Structures are given as C-alpha cells and as structure tokens.
Image (cartoon, rainbow, N blue to C red; front, side, top):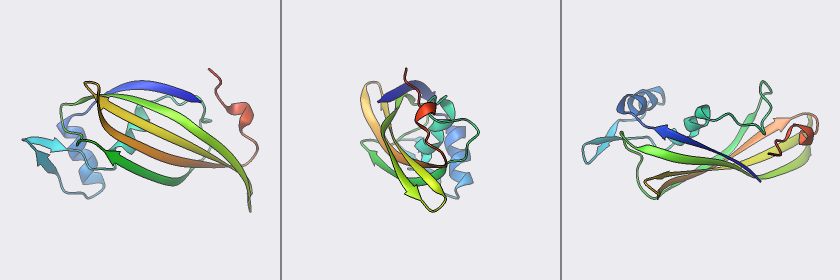
Length: 133
C-alpha cells in the first residue's frame, strides 16, 4: 500500500523523558540507556502521514511490538511506516475505518523492532482521503 521513511536519532535524554512519562524504570544495556518497549509508538510524531486526515480524531485499537535487539541511546534508526491494510465496518456511531500500520526500524541495516498498530477512524467513508502517491 503506502509507506514513508524517516531517520530517527535516539538520545539518552529522550529515552529518560519517555520512561519517566510512562513511569517505567530506566534500564541500561552495555552502559547505554535502553528505550522502554513501547517507545516506538512516539516515533510516529516524526512522520507526516499523508493517508491519515489531519485534525480528525483517531481511536487507538491495538499495538504489538517484536524486538530483535533493544533500542539504546545513540542509535540512528532508519524507520519505515507502512499502511498495510485498511478495512471498513459498520459501527453504532457510523462507519468505522481500521488502518493497520507496520513500523519497521533498523540500525545499520540490522532489524531492531517491528511494531504493528491499528488506528480507528469513525465517520464517513475515508477512501477519498487516502494518499495514492
């Protein structure tokens, strides 16, 4: 479907701030801070996601993470965010559009994490708002 790329530099301060915001303990690996397992969810802030309508509310459906190695301070991650599926269903408050996204982050061409997230939009048919680039 659609995908976009972004490079993300992970700092010790960013890891520490995120860990404190979710009340997670700060951990280290080989002397480097380790990012909490849910941290990739905030990587979305770095992306301009053309297939999601700006300003329209989204519900968070599900998320899951699969790690090959920990994210540590000092890493530069090459991340690809892809819209992997879109499904529509009728709900009590109208049409529901389910957007399934996969975020794949690598460091020096080695897979670090894959995250799958489902976002739900309520309302009219969102086909016309999809990015076709």
